[in-house]
Image (cartoon, rainbow, N blue to C red; front, side, top):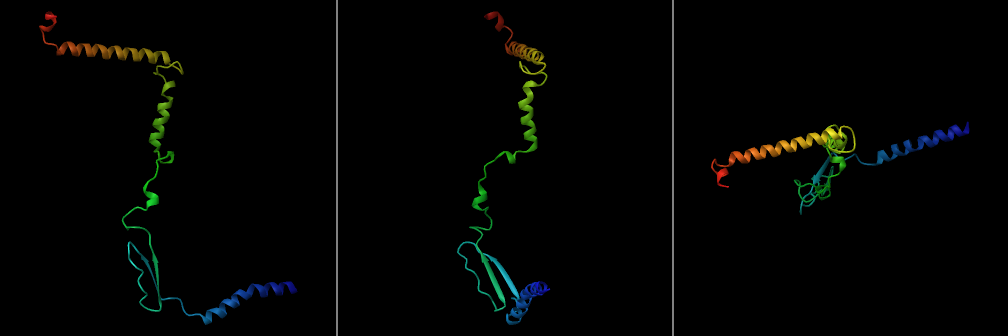
Length: 141
């Protein structure tokens, strides 16, 4: 029983202390101003006794990004998901059908397709070269 009385008196003592100190202290300020200072500006003085002025210097200019945030190195966390998907496709292209690689499936068909594309490009280049030559130039050689 004595413990309960002691616990109750200890718990109520901060409340009683706050009530006593609240009666002695003055009321909170009526006006609080927060001011950001740039360059050589000085903190303004309060206009009355009921006013509190809070001053802070955030940086050089209100229109500049802070120096700590200006230079950031690009990292993997800044890579878009589209680019990540492209990288996965590039890495896995070697093993996909149509690739000319000894690794993975369809490597043989991919080499044949590549060889045929190269032959077609050579024939087109030869045909374009013949079309660009004037007609009597073949006989002069």
